[in-house]
Image (cartoon, rainbow, N blue to C red; front, side):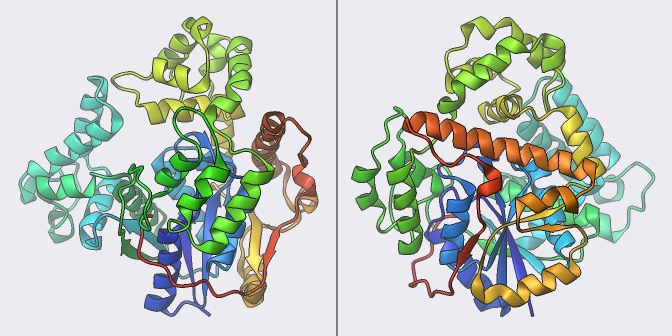
Length: 453
């Protein structure tokens, strides 16, 4: 039995995701594809357009065999923490052979060389990076400049912190053009983070790189090659209106039919959520926490906490305040994540607890295909942490510290469901403990064209 993992959000699932699953099975002969998927909040610091059960259902109906939830603490973190947790999750399954990820390039060797430097952090890189950060350069640009500095050094003195400067390190020197190519897109950056995590963990997992096809990550045009961003924009335009009945017809070619059917059913019964739907809760959090308490929110600095506290009276909505608080050295996306941490009460203590538990202290199943029963049997035998298929059993399966970490997932799910109920103006199922995992009969998904990731 061979199983390959994918770390994903499926927000929502589209043709590119279906293509990736098909290609994995075609190229590797894998019997199973496992998705480690974000829950109800995603890495850019926003709610998913539909909940995790619906997105798991989409994936399972379109070729995935098993979906496991990535804990929310890491799902809404930086690319580094997101990737580290995803790789750790697959390692703890004990029955996954490799991890597949998409990028704008198929040059795995180039991405691996950059990941090696970032994983080892030689003295020359550390000093240059720290210097740029102190100067107020945003993190992505600071990393790019520091790597350029390393690349500009001669092979014989590229690493000056007492390490062996022989061939393995010399081959990590690359050109500025290579750096621009490798660090020029979110997908490439995530791919490097996956490789870095594997390097640091000395992971037995094998990397499989699949070059993205189709529209760019931020492209909002609908087509058979449409990105998830384009689909979300069609369903919930930037003006805040949501008219799914009018929009579904335009998505026929952008999503596999089984996934579109699930999405349509969800949005005709419950509204799509946007960050601004959580504005009231976020506003209350800003008013209820003092500057010192704000400073303990994950990824918050004392300076950011002071700015948020000082400007709390100017708060109107999540997106408005995020735009107001971003700065030259704090991007909109990072600020959105910080505000989401505040919304979900993800603190420095939460992250310290997660790290003490090696990121993933449980494997929570969101759904599976009935044909994947042999994989589930293997998982129960090989997993190095408890496997949770029924949330009510978690209390007896987990140690107290692991259950405390799980409570963040539960809270995030319940807040999402409650906010959706308020927006719908009618009661919706809100208890996470009553939700059943998704079970999908084995189906064959019609072939679709290559698409964006």
